Length: 542
Image (tube, rainbow, N blue to C red):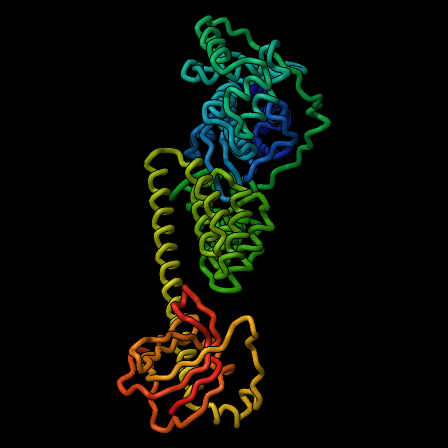
């Protein structure tokens, strides 16, 4: 059915101006001023389209983020007087608004596009376009959905591909596998082979031949058994509902005039207050609009804003925006990322959500997962300029990360150096004041022998000319009377017996200006790395 059955509508025009009805099925709503019968016929076409598209995609009960509301005026004159354009759908406060009058062509391309967008994640654009073009000419004939050729501007290669593989008897039964593979991001070769045992080159050649042949018989596929009289319940549409619906379909000042007229005629209706931007007043009047709560939340701060966005998420669980707004309120990067993950799940096509998710994961230290989000954002980008912008943003963050890591490394090195400085001071102090340490109980009164016979004891006397402060400990350089230098290590000052007078001694790292006379006993244990011949066991100042 390409038109809205004008003959059927004409039969019910007598009382059409006053008797508006409302019907609903799935995501579709019909507000009809031409009686219940044409409304049911319209709803039948919409539901069969939804079923047929779902069968092709392998998905049951396709839904949309926002309802699709058809506003059917009793005649073309009534629609024009309201300043509306037939078949031009726009997103209103709470639904897509599609005004029509008898005889107008149904905007089935818009319906198909919304269903495809809200129920698939990764179909190639050419396949999406083909599906939209395929269903733009959809009609119902008894128990069948019919797919005749579309208008000339839609009769292109994308349409031919989908018409061939989704409706031709030789391929239609396997079309679901083809589309499922493509949505799962399988490459074209794999998708064609898994579904039809064709290579991509072979399949595309068939498409070219099909389009060139121009032999497009209307294909018929079985649809659901629906009894419009039984399955589609009609109830009267209240005057205030009709007035709000017309205002929702309008734009700009025309819409504002109608909302003000609603307030004048019916009092403070929440929907009209929302339409005029009076969101706080609409909330106070019990608004049930998710969009209203989002706008209201943006005007609030802190907990009030959070509660408003949470209410919006409850009113429309399929809408990603409330989660994006909640994420903006969140200061914790990990919690922000979880909210944005939910938003990306609800609206996987939104590039900006993936970008914000990548940033949140990056700030939470989830660098691998941030990379996945960046790649998804690039994949979703619609043009090279946008992809370049995303890559630039990613590069800037990566540069900031490198700078942050470099700063952290500097801080770590400074902390290590500071710790070593404190340890150096402690070790030097231990050499100068062992009695004090022993008196305080920091070292044992009795020093146990920690060396063994495998490493013989050696002795050296001379001047302590230098102390090398190394990470392994202190390296003492003793110059003997024969002018030879003995280098020995003190790794743990508490294990060294220190004797002799230290009053007035000043020890520091490096060459000593006043080298004291010392006698060393050390365990011979050469260490090539430290450049020492042993470890000190006894240090006696003379």
